[in-house]
Length: 500
Image 1 (cartoon, helix red, strand yellow):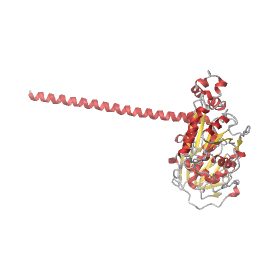
Image 2 (cartoon, rainbow, N blue to C red):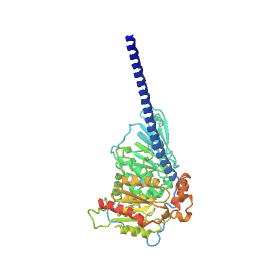
Image 3 (cartoon, rainbow, N blue to C red):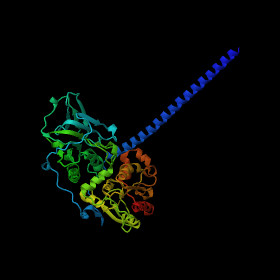
Image 4 (cartoon, one colour):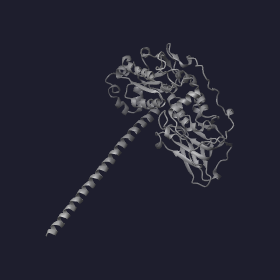
């Protein structure tokens, strides 16, 4: 009986241990499940937020702001860029680039990342949500008449085909480039021109002509795609017939990227052979560069602005330092707008800037002005102050250490305004500040009345779509800055220069 009691006790303890182990196992499984679900929820929230902002940016870009690139006559005594004399320094080349400028093909070995005889394509889902690109490496042949790029395999391969938008925002309708991996050499068109250097194929289209989009959609991603070749690259450009003035405006920059004549792909009768062709331009972030995603090695937005200074011969490589030059007044440029989103009290704003310690100039920066002259003009200032809009893109030409002050109109558009300028400007090596307009400073309060939904509930306007949001907060709104409320922002800009 004693033995039976011991056996019973042992069995009871084993059962108890089994129960405890079972309960612990269940608790562990529930804990793991809870953590996984929590992580997925956080991840989903992040993805949803990013997608919402991306969609907002896409919707914005589908509507062209009226008058955004029109020439505006400056009222009164306000200066325009053409009134300012060129700063004496190195003069960049201003001659047009034409086919007769073609230089001998260099024997310098180009730089590639992909294996020979390979096509690597990136779809919209793998970028910001806009770009489509292909890197085609090996025996590559372009046909301008067909707007096609073909890879000739060294041995028999499966035939594959991609349709790629050569503009960096795939929602813009342009003629697609057909990229084909042929099965064998027999299907290949014979070369009529052979290049030993690589090429980049892109389109001038869509929003080209709007200053912000010129840089965001084309010039910054073109720098990323071509800088690795150190000038030994051919630029294949489509859609020129719709934007011929674009090439005139940016010919100096294009020459800085390529030592060779660009090719009008839409009118090119040749079959050109290259060792490597990049089709399309990739955008990963608006108006900035993601270093780890740059082919050929990391580049930053500071590298791009340095390239601009070298190419345009901008004399200033640093903003004024009030530590080293305490008696020197930093210069502030207040951007005058001649159409919508006006400052209704520019003289008072200029006086407030003077009171904060700045030498202040009020000026209109024209979209059709000489890009080189305007860049050199902006480079002579330390602070750029303006209403949200394409004109703030001129911050690219400020000397490093300078300041951009963005005035954000009323209407809860801070997320959009900062996405376009805050991170890019910081990546350029500048100080970013913004000032959000209150409803009392907005002309909308008077024109719409305090009971209008655009005044009482901006989020309802946002929910109704980009068209209404643009109409109320960007197209119809002017502001009268409360200079007392604005004074601390000016003081922050001055203190930044004093601390350098």
